[in-house]
Amino acid sequence: MKNIVVLVSGGGTNLQALIDAQKSGIIKNGRITCVISSNPNAYALERAKNNNIDTDVIKRKDYSEFNEYDKALTELLKSKNADLIVLAGFMTILGKEVIRAFENRIINIHPALIPSFCGEGYYGLRVHEKALKKGVKLTGATAHFVNEVCDGGPIIIQKAVEVKNGDTPEILQRRVMEEAEWKILPEAVSLFCDDKIKVVNNKTIIE
Image (cartoon, rainbow, N blue to C red; front, side):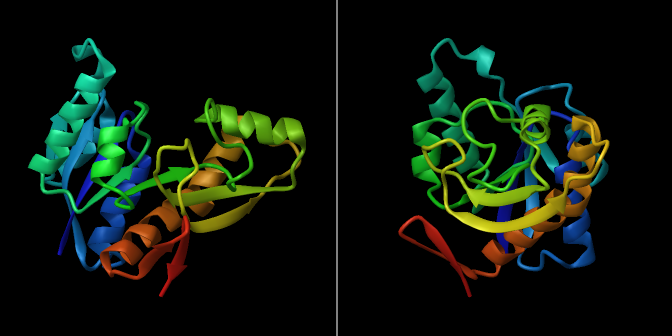
C-alpha cells in the first residue's frame, strides 16, 4: 500500500476526486495519508479533516530564501514517508531538491492537452482564456509527472473535452474539471500505485 501525499492551495476539488476514488475502490493499492497546504485557510484542509486525513501547512513566505523552502518541503515530504506526491491545485513552485528527491513520483494535473497552453504562466483560468482566444475546438486535461521543466514531465494520461459555442473561461474550466481532470487524475494515481507506469526517455509506457 503506497502512501499518497496531496499538495493543495485552494478549494480541493481534485483532492475530493481522489478521496472519492479511494473510497470507491478505483485507487486500490494506495491511500491518502496526508494533505499539505501552502495556504492555512484552504478549504481543501477541511475536506481532508472531514475524511480523517492528516494535514500540514507549509508557507513559502515563512522562508526568506527559496532554497530554504525547497529543503524544508523536501524534508517534510520525506517525514511523511511519501511514495507518491500529487499536486492538486498547488500554487507554489516546486524546487529542484523536491523534484530530484521524488523523481517520477510527483503527479500533476494540467487543464489543457500538453503541449498546448502549458508552461510558465499557464495556470487556472488563464489556460482556458488562451484556449478560447485561440479558437480551439478541443481542449482537455493532462496528468503528467513533474520534472524541472514547467509542464515538461512525462505524460501519463490525456483526455479531450469539447469546446462549445458561448463558452466562457469559467464554463470551460468547469467542463474540463468534470469531464477530464476528476477522471484522469485518480486513474493516473491508480496506475502508479499498481506499478503499471514505466518511464523511458521522458515518455511513459503504461503496462
